[in-house]
Image (cartoon, rainbow, N blue to C red):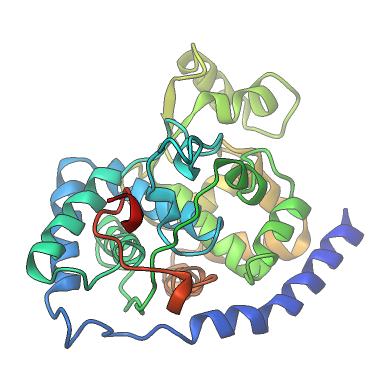
Length: 322
C-alpha cells in the first residue's frame, strides 16, 4: 500500500503543471461586460432551490465533481440521450438515478438566456451553482470567487463516467490515482472529500463492503444503518450530526468511524491523510479556506476553448441537435 501511495504522489506532482495550464483560460468577472447579471441570476436560482431542499445544494456540488472528472468541466454531464448517443454521462453507472440539481441548472440557464442570449455557457453555470451551493450550505463560511470562461463540450459517454469517477469503495491508492490524473493533489482529495458532510447516499453504494463484510465502521452506527438499509434504493444522510450543513464535521465522523463510504474510511489508511483529517476536524476555519481553493482548482480541469466547445442554447442538447 505504501509503495503504491508513493507512486500516486509522484503522479500527482507530474500533473500539477498540466492543471495550472488548464486554469489559465479562466478569469474572475468574465461576464462583467457581456452579461453583468449572470452570476447573480444563477445564485438566485440556487438560493431558491436550497431553501426548498438542502439536498439540491449537495447535488449541485456533486454535479461539478462528476462533470469535471469526465471530459473536463464542460457540462457534458448535462447532455440528454439522443438516437446518436444512447448512453450519455448522466446515464452512466455512477450517475444514473443519483444526479440532483439538473432542474436548477435548467432554470438558471433559462433565466440567463433571457437576459443575455447565447453568452453564458452551461459549464460556467454548473461551476457558479456549485460555488453558490457551497456558500449557502456552509452558512456563508465558504465564500470565494469562481473564475469563468469555459465552453460547453459536445461529447458525452456514459462508459467514461465509470472509467474516471472513483467508486465509493475505492482504497486510498485508487483515490489518489484518480485525483492525480486530473492534476489534483492528495490534499485536494482529502479537502474535497469534505463535501460528503452534506447530501445522501444510496445503501447500494456502501452496504456490501461496509455492512455485509468486515470493516472498521463503528458497530452501533452499523446497526443503525442496517435498520434503515432495507433495500439498495434506500438513501441515508452522509452526515447524521449536521446533515444540512457543509462543514468540517465530516472529518470528526471519519475519526469516529461513522462514515458511509469505503472511500471515506480510506482517509485514515495512511499517516499523511490521517493527519490531514485530524487537522480539518478542529473546526478552526482551515478546511473552509482550503475547500475554496480546491473547488476553484477542480473547476479548471480540462476547460474547453475555441473550436473544442460551444455555448449551448439548451444545456441538455448540443447546438447541432437543438
